[in-house]
Length: 218
Image 1 (cartoon, one colour):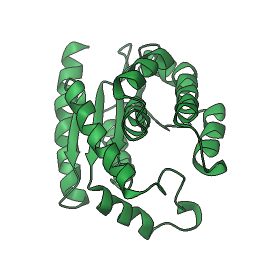
Image 2 (cartoon, helix red, strand yellow):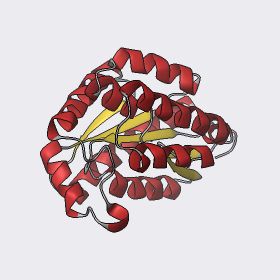
Image 3 (cartoon, one colour):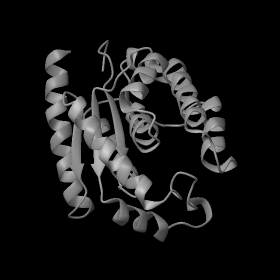
């Protein structure tokens, strides 16, 4: 991709939204278009981040919302400084499974810490690094949880966040809708009804439009 900065795409969604399935197709699509692509995730993506992920999702049952947020921010800051900033500067495009908007929705909205408060802390943790495109896979929480629970065994066992009550996940969805309105320049809502292929058609159309814009502004 030469000296052009890489494209930074983040994927958001409630539990069971199908974003992991679509992530694989997004990565393949970008590679077909000539991009060098790095996949990563939040929390995680670095040795320190993966330890934090294990702690957050599997090692403790109860965390104060501020403590929970602080751990997500720590993982995020490390990922930005160890991976994202450098790779984007090299021209590598990044597809990240969750990023700042997850904290704004889950901790800011569902945990009642405040979306604006969490967004300010996100800006501090990332030193201003923002996605070029955020794809939010919108799913009814009851439907998404049913999907997730249907495969909830072994390595796919439900984590601490997934085990939260339905009302929590409904607040997450409501918060994502607020976030979408706050960031229309990068945030795209992808309905998840109609099956995997129909969802991919929506994603591909959005990606094609973003690539035209990105290449024009490079």
